[in-house]
Amino acid sequence: MSERAPAEVTEVLVVGGGQAGIAASEHLSARGIPHVVLERDRIAERWRTARWDSLVANGPAWHDRFPGLTFDDVDPDEFAPKERVAAYFEAYAEKFGLPIRTGVEVLSVRRTEGRGGFTAETTAGTFEARYVIAATGAFQLPSIPPLVAEGAGVVQIHSSEYRNPRQLPAGAVLVVGAGSSGVQIAQELRASGREVFLAVGPHDRPPQRYRNRSFVWWLGTLGLWEKSTPAAGAEHVTIAVSGANGGRTIDFRELAAAGITLVGRASSCENGVMRFGADLADNIRRGDANYLSILDEADAYVARTGIDLPEEPAARELGPLPECATEPLLELDLAAAGVTSIVWATGFRADYGWLPAGALDERGLPRHERGVSAEPGVYFLGLPWQSHRGSSFIWGVWHDAKFIADKIEIQRSYLAYRGNSVPRGSGRGAVATAVAEAVRDPEPASV
Ligand SMILES: Cc1cc2nc3c(=O)[nH]c(=O)nc-3n(C[C@H](O)[C@H](O)[C@H](O)COP(=O)(O)OP(=O)(O)OC[C@H]3O[C@@H](n4cnc5c(N)ncnc54)[C@H](O)[C@@H]3O)c2cc1C
Image (cartoon, rainbow, N blue to C red; front, top):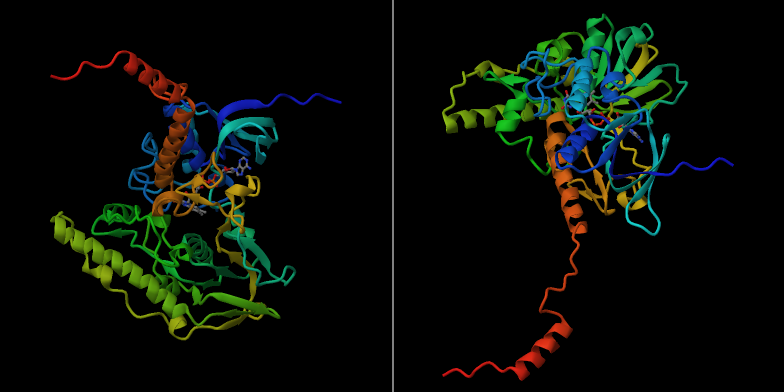
């Protein structure tokens, strides 16, 4: 029998070499904390192979980055193409000399029996670490509602598998989900000449630009990125924003005018007939309200601070709802409408099954406070609303990573303590000795 290779020992094991793992590694390095980052594919793999070809960052390059490096070949006010984002993180890892090992998948992490810390089984052998940071991201497994049976005669793909219109069979396409992904994919399909139906649920839609400032600037200035608690139900509200075509505000009236048929939330499918909720107009109005609330807050900010930004009254002219919203289609016979494919832009699920059970709740989701797990020694990064609204975005995860590295440093400083917690002159023995000495040598009486 072949001998098992000895475990590789490190202080912190970071799992995942996307932006979250890179940020963690930078902050651990800055504190001199030994660690290894294990990435199953390549650095920032999801930006390379889990996004469609034409994707660009939703926010401008001056903002959607880490503090330690600017994009060298993207104008700060432009939107970095996805390949550039991946290259950026690779350059970042190189600049800071981060200890990232690619092509190594972590299969399981369990508590090390009889000792502190954790043992990780990986495709490159066993690792032992005192701390583990799960930086595998919020966008792990495709989440597709089980509405349409497989083999129902339509091609079904998730947005993470969508690459470009040529990939889909000829015919009309139903895109389900109108967050950033669904809207951009629907627009691209429509521009390629396809007939497109877009199922629109509740969403937020900040203005891409207002009064000469990007939405990222407004969300930052108004403190909305920093918000720590989502409004009730807001965790489930997708944000529709796009850097495509130079960055335009997502406007469902404009999508309808371009020939996309908007429908409400997809609710069921029977015998090839897809049913949609009667909520389309409400969803659009709710998105409008979110959009207008940001304009209001921005205007109030300008009035309060006197900052010199040009007025933009036209931004408030929304126009009437399109007919497809006022007279919504409530069902669609897919075959009769020529729909040959469905793109599910319905989000992602977490996959933390490889972590110790104590780190997860009954649904398999992280049990944590600001990324500090209920399982001591385990930390999370990149969770939506981990500490604030920006947590799952590029700039936000960097700040969460700093917080987590601080937490680990604090724990290490306790473990580094080498005293015996019994100050000289204290403890029962010391008190008895002091009393005996006092009796032998009483203090002189005061005069
Ligand atoms: C379509 C889309 C567009 C987005 N656009 C923007 C944007 O413009 N701006 C912005 O700020 N944010 C954007 N985001 C949000 C977020 O920034 C990205 O999803 C980002 O990729 C999340 O980074 P992450 O490091 O948390 O996770 P990921 O990028 O998913 O990285 C996790 C890494 O962990 C690895 N991994 C997973 N499991 C294991 C394992 N068991 N062992 C070893 N490695 C493992 C994966 O291979 C992956 O490389 C977008 C998200 C999506 C889905």
